[in-house]
Length: 52
Image (cartoon, rainbow, N blue to C red; front, side, top):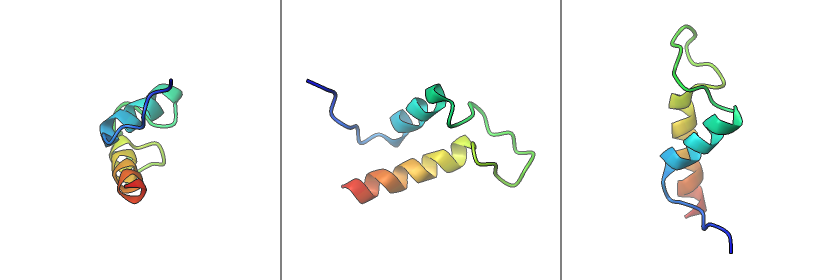
């Protein structure tokens, strides 16, 4: 019996951070890099909204 997918976007971003897809902190040196946690959170919210 596996875990059911969560409705919490922060949990999804934490999983991406552990796998190395997202950085721990926003560097703010570029407008927004590809591994930015701020953008990852927006992306996760969009993904969960689409799935619901």
